[in-house]
Each structure stands twice: as structure tokens, then as C-alpha cells.
Image (cartoon, rainbow, N blue to C red; front, side, top):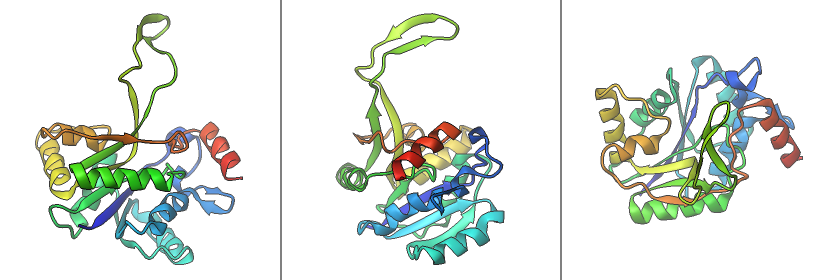
Length: 224
């Protein structure tokens, strides 16, 4: 059973307020995406990495692959309009068997702990899939300009990545979504739509997604 990582990196990063995609912004002299990729390069459990990106960044990615000796990067494919499209393009290019595990991880989650990755893979091997989540710790409300109601956080979790699925299940879920013109916010939503039970595994607050300039400041303080 092979483990293939897909890193969708075709986003424009407009919400970060920077002039170029956030995954290519340098922090301490290293592009953000490299922090994410190195986690998988170092893991003995990972066989292959596929990156989906805008074609204009192919030369930079090839250069970074050589510079940081990211030998597990086997393909760089074209990103799509939406995240789902980018993942599908990478999935379609993978030389995978039905039971191989596809591990989808955000390029902008650079602090994925190795232990979280290992446990997520273990659960996926046993149960067919796994999605990394963290439990809510703050009081939750529903409202806009004022509080409509308070929501119990007992069964509320925040979804992270990696999200891991059998190749056959994720491909089936993707094709169903396109047939029905459905776009989900993540892969687990698509897989649940084909009737699969999605298994939860413990995430980490360090595994946050960098979206804004404030997130970058927090990341810089952590890597410092």
C-alpha cells in the first residue's frame, strides 16, 4: 500500500494581503510551502508527493525541489480554479492502485507535527480513511450583529489537514461531485457524500492554516 501526498498549491492567497501567493512567501529565508513539504520528505511512511500549482510557478518549484532535495516530489501538475479542481488534477495524474492512500494536505499548514501525520496514516490504514481535527475550546455562538443562540461545543470540531482516503474512494467521490456540479470545502465532505463513514483523528493547534498577515506573524514567532 503506497502513500501518496497531494499538496494543492494553486491558490492566489488573496486573503493574506500579499502581492503573491502565500505559499511562496519566504519566512526565515525559506518559502512557506517548503516547511510543509519537508514534513513529508522526512517521513518514512510517505512514498510520493504531487503538487498542483499555477504553471507560472513551475520553474520555482523545480528549483526548490533541487535546493531542498525533495526527492519524493514526482510530479508538478496544473492547479485548478478551485481547490477541488487542483486536488482532482493531481489525483488524476497519480499512478495509484485502488487501495493506495491519498494524503491531501494544505500548502499553508507548515507546522504539521510528525506524530499527527503518523497517527492519521495508522487510522486510515485500519479503517480506510482519516481526517485530522481539533476540538473547539471557545464558547460558540450563532449570530451576526448580536447573539442568536449559543451552540454546544461538545460535538463540534475544527477540520484540518491531512485528510487521507483510499484512492478508489476519493476518485469515486470526486467524479460524483462533478457529475452533480457540487463543490465541497474539503475532501471529507465529498467522501461522506458517497456514503463512507469518515473517521476523525486528533490534530494539533500548531497545525493551523496561514491565511492572514496575523497568521504569518504567529508562524514567524514560532519558527524563530
